[in-house]
Image 1 (tube, rainbow, N blue to C red):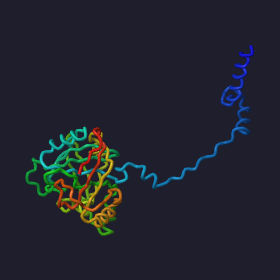
Image 2 (cartoon, one colour; image 1 turned 180 degrees about the vertical axis):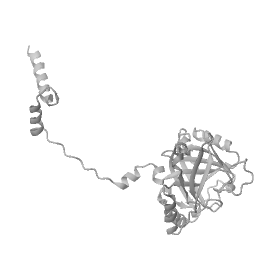
Image 3 (cartoon, rainbow, N blue to C red; image 1 turned 90 degrees about the horizontal axis):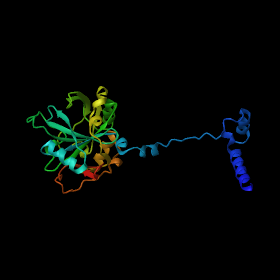
Image 4 (cartoon, helix red, strand yellow; image 1 turned 90 degrees about the vertical axis):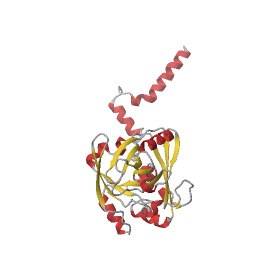
Length: 287
């Protein structure tokens, strides 16, 4: 009996400690408990730390990257196959840039950015001009530049000009996607031939037409890659830093250093950009 009583007593003792949560107890008892035995918890005060919030963002978000431009010599399909072999992600066709002599493939990056593989378009053998230094890539592919997104593009251009850098007049662009949709965007750029602006490190500015939000490249590009970092080397570091700041990019994000001979056929170019992607096959550098 003593053993059974001991268990019953233990059971009563347990219930005596948890009865406050039992809905069958009286309202008055619960009020008494709340008033005398369970103090009201103090409301927490959360202090936002803008710096901590900034560094918790992805690299793409901190840079406000729209896309990287990876220029390749030769055939676009061959370049797409090489990218897939290196990363495990197959790029898809984007479209052709009329009167600029190029066409592209695209791969999605994280947080609304994408990786553009750009090649000369054989369907445009004699365009009025080319861009993104595609004619001066050399024997090896390389990232020639990148684009940052600006919601208020005209204001961004005015701000840059006010501190001495002209990113170029805002121009309207459009092209058909592979599914026939008309993609529209606006650019501010002067990225045609070497040396590219800002000692080769200055991005161009882009704003997508809101009516195209469902089929912008970053939305339709295949996922699977994440941009870990984008590093830059420039022949004139001071000039590159000034230009980056003029368009609202912190040079520290690019770990900007003096240009060196990389031994990859890019000697003589004013800058080198090296992107590290996290892919299904591990970390892969493109530069």
